Length: 336
Image 1 (cartoon, rainbow, N blue to C red):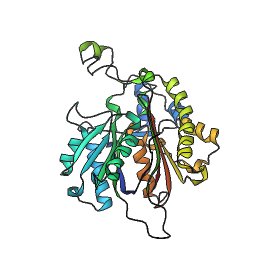
Image 2 (cartoon, rainbow, N blue to C red; image 1 turned 120 degrees about the vertical axis):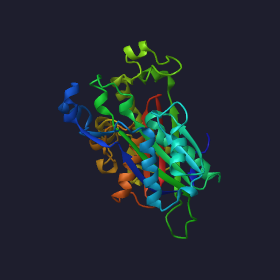
Image 3 (tube, rainbow, N blue to C red; image 1 turned 45 degrees about the horizontal axis):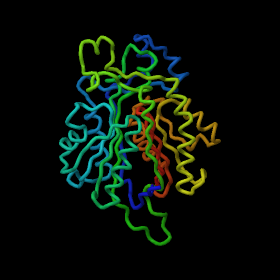
Image 4 (cartoon, rainbow, N blue to C red; image 1 turned 45 degrees about the vertical axis):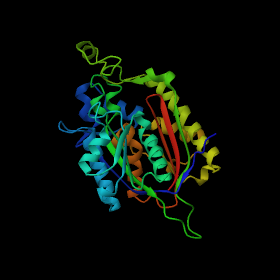
């Protein structure tokens, strides 16, 4: 089995940005969405949506710029940008290219498309560049403008999603002094895929399989289609399995984990994990009530909030879990 540790990596800063419009559940009533149903079934009370002149890159740029400012690092120091997204501005260039240009970095830049797992995939990828010495300062962003691919006429799917971006800055860790906390970095990780269930969560039209056409538009195949029941059951099974895998790989116990940052899809999925594993609710970062499901942005937004409110400190052990379309999942145990 290949090594799944990437030590000697520090998170230098974290920050986020959201769409310019705050949209409470009540604002969706005109679309036929029941505000009380949304809260009862998902725990979501509001979300943020991009304005008419915004796109995914605008969110990613804002989050990236805020992250660099938090770290007091200049764009010229960034040599790698990795963006996890499923809603790029264009087929090409990548969102990462647009971020590189806007920030004025001289950096390699590319996107990773694993939907809601995109940030964890991107974090692990960038960490390998840092570990091998191929990068000194890597900006990792999860960004999605999900309202651009969700059908306003689908009252069971459209209310779930919001638009946002979260960013972290990675760099090599300083050598720990004698008696100091253990070396920061990835203690364990797993990236997974189950393409047999691809049809459970996909945008069927608009790509090379079904190029955009009048027929695709008439069938609304350019919007996200989700088998909610199947995805829900899969996610409920996945989270406990992913947590246990991280514990087995790292040799840690559940009590050694200071905080769990899951993908913010549905509070009932998180509640099921809490119940099945007997985990204290305080260990979980939950903010989907205020942001909705922001896909690849959900984990880094939650991380940034936890850093800002002091829940994440140097030496703390943080577990990140992403899961979504593909179907894909990514889990990562990180010593801050």
